[in-house]
Length: 408
Image 1 (cartoon, one colour):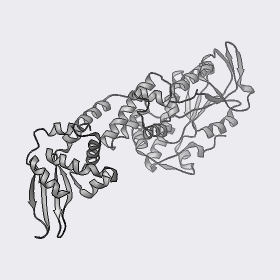
Image 2 (cartoon, helix red, strand yellow):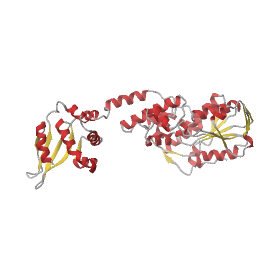
Image 3 (tube, helix red, strand yellow):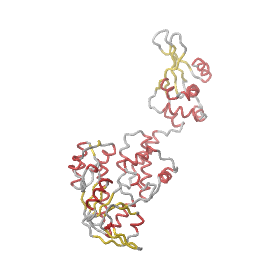
Image 4 (cartoon, helix red, strand yellow):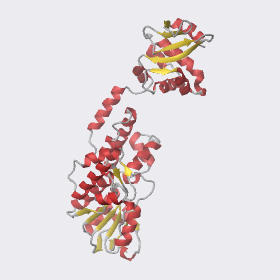
């Protein structure tokens, strides 16, 4: 195959320059053009799609030299028929050089491929220019997020590959617009909003958003949401009243139901907002007969904040907020506390001190997002309890979940 390739390439201006071998019986040649072909760029435009895909696979690693064994492995059996056609086109256009070797009693064999202008070739094949990507990254990092959850998540992308980081950073800015406009919808509706295609958000991206922020807290859900609570309240609506004090357990109210409330009869000691669902149910059983106990589904979505603001207008009481003792939990607690601060009401963290973190039976190590969020939280004026928790997490390099604490 190489002997035939050597004969063919001579007609395209490709020279075979001898290289020093290990001995007289070991021969090496470098197949190359002295200058790129005048129509090198046009030639790439005529490559079939399968050949373009194979070239991009070979270019994926940043190494300037690729061993032949690596190239054939990347091609696989299904694409081996295209390998020599691609090699011929790369050499004929001057995009690469190929070293071939001849051992005693054997024919010429490919050894390694050396790229000449890989960045330009990548651009011609449809991979964005790194300088263009960097300019786009710089511009996106200058734009401020309206939602306080997103800056630290954007910071956690700093060490990721450029294209990966850019794609996710663009997704975060689309998410910021979605949240700012108070939108609700399914995964497909968000994907259409963010990227103009209902299937354009990949499964790994959905998992990333769900694990770090929680999709339901972003207004991305397939079902009607519900405000879960237990409280001694009588809600008055245009069509009648709902006496929650009669219920022995937790109940969910839809946002549309809460929006109809025009008056509440209540006498509660405080509002207790709890993030973890198991901890919420424990707190509701212990305190729900005299206090208002609300389940907080992570970062509060717009509908949840609006529903709670309605309750708070009619049933004012201080806040005790309990979130996971982790960086996201501190940020969530601050966001919820802002509702009470806007109403001129006091608030305190509940079971969110450094001693609560240390008392947990299990801990998790801090991730990239956690460390980025801790740095941002340290720049805020935090209540003493939360400031101490932030310091404890940073010093120990750990975080936890409130499910390991008692709320009765």
